[in-house]
Image (cartoon, rainbow, N blue to C red; front, top):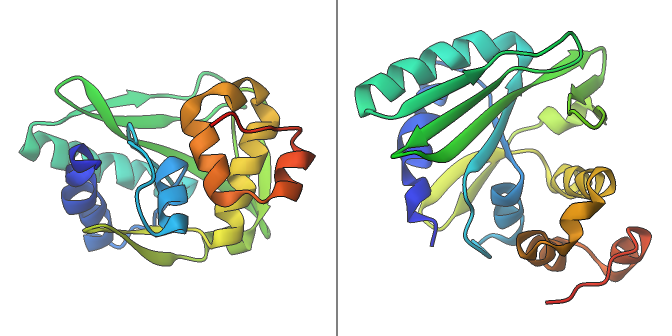
Length: 186
């Protein structure tokens, strides 16, 4: 399962590590890491990096994409309250998405169109994970869960999607589901 993501784990993320850039996998693949196995097909790997490293990340990924015949799409920020984004594509399919996070004192901020999310600086603790034959870094478990819960609060429309139902079933307890007013249908 998720063999299409092999280039992310075997080429792209190791390139970032090789040049000393810290990254954290979040989203559905981090939930798989929390579960210690893939629980569903994941479309892509969501990654965040420090904003101060974002330009270096873009350069490293551009070079890697060129050498491996992948395609990089760069989305500059639309305004002062938005973020840039990088997508890596293979044969027209997005396999990796990279966004920056912003640090001010001991607060880490994610910028999203529907509102920003703030976390303690401990989210930047790197936890090495193994999922099948893949390895990567993620935030600690409590932040994987907190990011997911905050995303569901901001986007309740996603609660009906099967992928989010599968993820919720894997990492949320009954109290958390109740807090989100969420009944699983799977």
